[in-house]
Image (cartoon, rainbow, N blue to C red):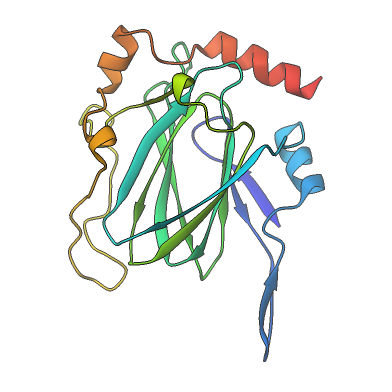
Amino acid sequence: MQIRELAVPGAWEITPRQFQDPRGVFLEWFKAEAFTEAVGHPLDLQQANCSVSAAGVLRGIHFADVPPGQAKYVTCARGAVLDVAIDIRVGSPTFGTWDAVLLDDVDRRGIYLSEGLGHAFLSLEDGSTVMYLCSTGYAPGREHGIHPLDPALGIAWPTTARDGSPLEPLLSEKDAAAPTLDQARADGLLPQWDAVQEYVASLRG
């Protein structure tokens, strides 16, 4: 597999090598050795999630308090989503920037988002099935959100589905009520760059 760091430090795109024959396709969508070499520490898998979304469903932006945060290794087993990493670490040189990876059932790429980053994705077709490996379990008391359509972030969400039909973003009530990035910062909800760096360094030993 090929692993490259995105424009948001702490996020990586993972492109697996696929083996095809008349029976179908085989690939390694996670490989501990390659992951550890790229990221600098192993993935401490504590929870695995699966979501299935209709076209236009927009999930996020989600993040968790650091420490311990929640790192995510994400892939799309069926359909297609635009998956976005957002730098919400106060004090980061790239604070407020984002980068995106198309996850689909063609290239079968993945994305890894380390602790302290915001995460969101938009489903580009009905039935898009996203699989997450998470470094910590669900803990509602330390998990937060930012509105994914915050104009200050300027995320370029697609306006057409995979089949060419128009897309209208569909958010959960919780995500639709989430604060903007500036509001979340003023409320003291965002991770601090120094604290995130210290925690990630502890994972590397």
